[in-house]
Each structure stands twice: as structure tokens, then as C-alpha cells.
Length: 405
Image 1: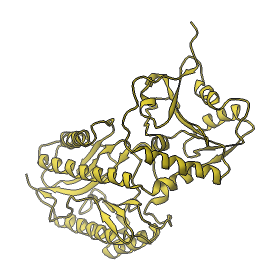
Image 2 (image 1 turned 60 degrees about the vertical axis):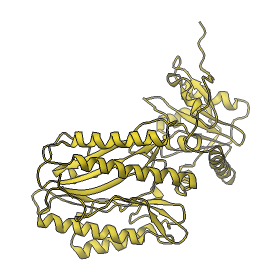
Image 3 (image 1 turned 90 degrees about the horizontal axis):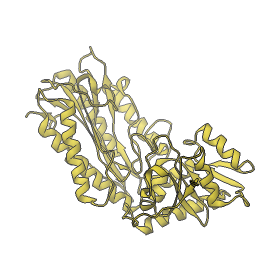
Image 4 (image 1 turned 30 degrees about the vertical axis):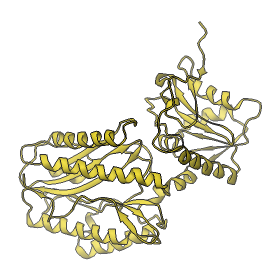
């Protein structure tokens, strides 16, 4: 039996994607302008976030390569046979499937799209994603081509959100609030981080399914941390049992078709001691000032500088652990990051209309010190023409989040 190296399969019908045809066409139009402006004949996308952004298809690698090839006239996603026709149904373009029967059939599929007779003079790749092994293999079939990094160009495109993107982000923020509301109902001594997190996650997934009945559902999650587990922003949930007076960190993360949103809040179980209250109030004060600063025209580094000064005045700068916020859009805890739009000392990007950023100050006081624990608040803001809109509605601060159930 002759088994193919690659083939096409249109099993079923194309399904409704997260965005309109016009939205995807506009994104690809801008991508091709990047190609023209930088003298690039062909792009090979390999990252989850960029393939999803330009095609709608979110791949699950499991050790296999995936890609999307774009020229000025062609656009094709390249997927593994294990996924059958799902990538075609979920791609706003054509799709080719490669098989496992021979090593490097992924590369043979690429060659089949463009042909061997007229190799591209220059190829755009994502330097922040392509491995050394993958680059070596690309060199074996495109030895005469020049490779150019396009990752930063594409990141800049993703930093400015369309109206359709902002709508999905706003829905995500609303659903994050719902997850937090559900979590609050279950907070009491004797309950575990795990069971409380499950309740919040389930509430959000059901709401996503209600609002987006034709979507795929994956990667919505909750980090619910207590006591010493609050010291890291990304500490997974455990089976720790809540105790009276515990500091808590509530983190709800709904994922809608690859679009991540977040809500993060500091809480306490029934009561808060004086040292903890002082640290909490300091972090809230910085959070409120940060919300005021996020407006068009200010640089990320300027926001960071002012908030650093405020933390220093309050006596807590030495406990600050990471940047004050970041961009939102096509990203996740395991893919994507618009590093050019983070509120850090070394980022001089100026905020502008249709950017979406968080404000999320955090301090961490080590065990053994008064007020030990991690304190973090997190809101999402959409930059407008002259101001910003806070799309996170869940309350924060001691007056709201000392939970007595």
C-alpha cells in the first residue's frame, strides 16, 4: 500500500470562527504589507498565537510541528494527520495534512505548497519560536534563501486590538468576574484550594459555552492560592485547607478561542491582622494610582517609575516582585506574549487607542515577617481616544474582600 507524505481532507464543513471573515482578511492584508515593506517573499508561522491570530486555528502540538505558510497569493495551515480535518474546519484558509510515515513530512508539505522550481529569496520566520533544529531543517530545503525575523513586526500588529477583539476581551473580563463571584460563595475554613478553584472554573466554562455556543472550549482555569501559596503569582492550586485569617489570592482566567483574560484579587478569611492590613492597603493604593495613570500618551516605563516611587514612599518597594501589567489578546499561560507592551522599567512603548493592558501591582512579604504573603490586584483597561475604560468590575480592597461565609 502506497501511503502519502501529505494530503488534503475537507471532512464536513467550515465552522464559525471567533471573528468575521472581514476581520481575518484585514489581519492577513496587514501581514502581507509587512512582507512587502520588508522584502519578504514567504512567511512560515510556527507559534500557536500567530497561527491562531491569522487563521483562527489553535493547534495542539504534542511533539509535532505545525505551521502556516503565507505568500502574497497563498495561505495554508499545515497540520498533523492525528488531527484529521479539524484544522481545516477551524482555519480561515486552506489546509494541508502531513503524515507520520516518514520523518520530516512537515517539510515536504511546505515544499508541495510552493514548489521546488522557484524557491523564495527571503523567508520570514519567528525567531522567538523556531528551534535550532527546525531552523537547520529549513536551511536544508531553502539553502539559498535569506531568513528574516518577523516576530516583532507581528507582535506590534497584535498590540493594537480591533473592535471585534475588544468585544471578546470585554466578555472575558465579565466572565472572570462571574468566576470570582462563584469562588466567594465557597470560601470558608475547612474548604480546599482545589475544590474552590473547581467551582470557579466550572462557572466560567459554562458561561463561555452559553455566550459562544459554536466555539471550542479549552484552557480556562483558576489559580486559587492560600497562605504561603500566595507568594508566587503563578503558583498552581493545591489541596491545602483554608484556615481562619488566611491570606488568599483569587485568580480567574477564562479562555475564549485563545483570548485570555484575568481577574486577580487579594482576600482574607474572616479577619485580617494589622500588619497584613497595612501591606494590603499599600498595594491597593498603588493599584488605584496605576489605574489613574493608564491613559493614551504615557509610556510604559513612566507608569512603572511613578508606581515605584509610590511603593518606596509607602515602604514596600523591596517587596515588589514583577512588572505592573501587560497586554491582553491572543495569549495564554503557555503561549504568546506581547512583550513590547508590558509595564516595566525597560519598555518605552507609548500607550495608544485600542491597546488593552492590565494594572496588577504585587508585593510579597516572606514567611516569618509581619504581614507575610503575596498581595495582588488586577484590572484590565481598554485604551480609548483620550482616556481608558476599566472593564473589570469585581471590587477590591479590605472593605470588600474580607470574606465571612
